[in-house]
Length: 218
Image 1: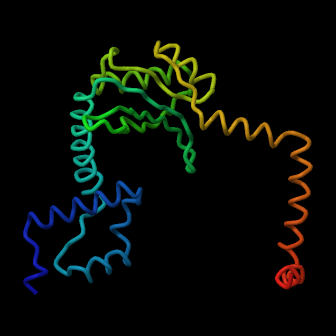
Image 2 (image 1 turned 90 degrees about the vertical axis):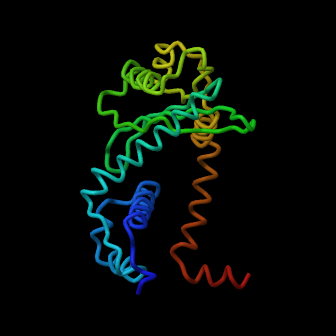
Image 3 (image 1 turned 135 degrees about the vertical axis):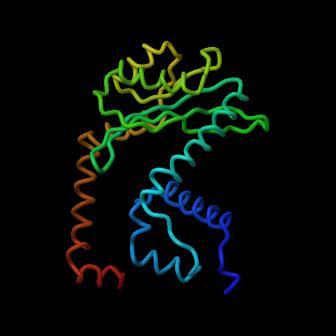
């Protein structure tokens, strides 16, 4: 049994690995209270005691965030020029968020990205409020204006206004432009007619096992 006995440093290492698993895979904190998970962990090592939800939320996860924040801050200070991407969205639980990611070339001449923030934006998603959040993140990471090359956003009027307020060169998001193009194509009468016919064909095989049988024969 001595091989399963944990000293303090080994337990901390496992606690940190558990916190990393929960954070990076977006698992609920309540995972550590599930009977099935407790049984699984006990089978791996009976002497390991799972940290409670309170320990994760008040200690492990916040300390992990602080350590990651310091690492990203050091990386950013060593880079010369940045471009940024930002967007607002609403989660499946109806919570509004805004994210900001920086992109730069590192010392090995490789394109690198780092998320500077994913923040709940409960205020109205106006250009002014978006610009305030982005500017706050710039200040938090001490990014000087001379290092800011451009910012990429979609064509939302609030995003465009935020970029104007920040006085940063704007680059339109190609993915959003492509999505808009495809959406407009699907609204064309000629395409709608083709899609309608394809759906009718699909419905035949979706609701008739006899049709599927005949298709297999063919």
